[in-house]
Length: 200
Image (cartoon, rainbow, N blue to C red; front, side):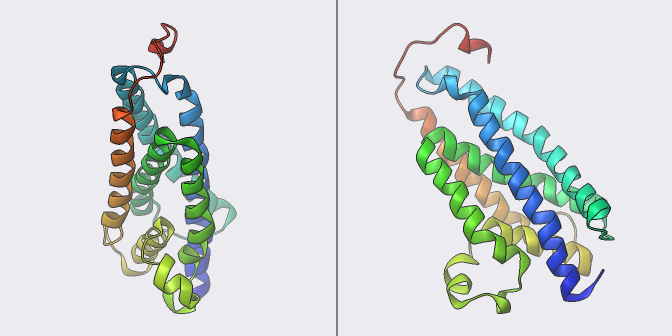
């Protein structure tokens, strides 16, 4: 499948499942470690490290699942290996952002996910010229889905490497999440450590 339809389908079948699975896994990781909120700093740092370790493993599963959906259900003929190597860190970077937002403050964390999902999907599926003026000027320059879509298309149509021009902006997305995690560790403890939560 090639041409503009192929570009549209690659955005829909690869980017959308990757983002949605990353969102769900990030929420589950937050729920798994939510009892560490407000505990001693050392406990929270250990929990945040485990969240990122789990995210690294889950993002690999997410990348593989998205490719299976695209090849199996979507019928796309895509270079699986380079796309996997691109989507794996992309998913991890986005999960780091979401987990960081959740751990820092829950209501704003949910808002981060809503904004990314609501504003970013059209940027992944459509070329810049096809977007409304508002999206071109205020949404397209920063949404992660835009860079995921661009990276996938560059691999499919221009034989780009897995680490390409779209990877660095996604890495900056992770950096924002890590900054939020760092800030979360600075919040003073509000209660004593429960011995049961130390084992998380």
